[in-house]
Length: 164
Image (cartoon, rainbow, N blue to C red; front, side, top):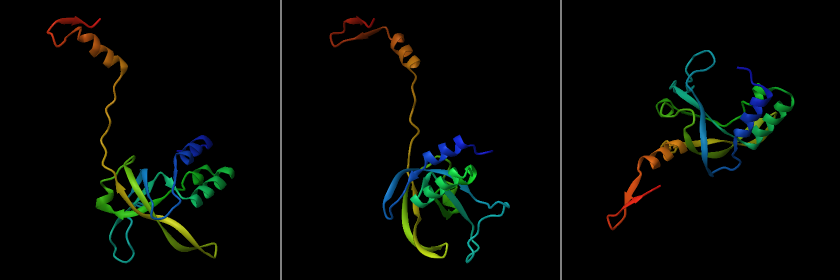
């Protein structure tokens, strides 16, 4: 699917900005759970050969947002929409997640080199899925139909009262 300017804008606008380490951010949702690389090979830790998953979230750091804006201005909409926080996770735990799963995200600071400069960056430390229940929806038509289906009610004195 081609990422248009409008789609890229919508994706960037949907990201929550996470800018502090050690703070639990609520309302972060899973956008993708990946178990394989572009060649279809499973992700594996180099030291243990154990498989892992990459969980992508609808959040970005200020640095990622800045990169997205620069690429958006350059009309590279595919790249602009791909800046988000992700975390490596145990495969079994990742299988419990799906697109839209609400989580609490905690970030941590790490030292890394960017363009030859030692830099402090924010990376995901942990995500915790939040237990949730799908809320019921009602339509006005259903509610009105229920009201009109019960034409009378009894009050405390056992008199019949017409609801109309």
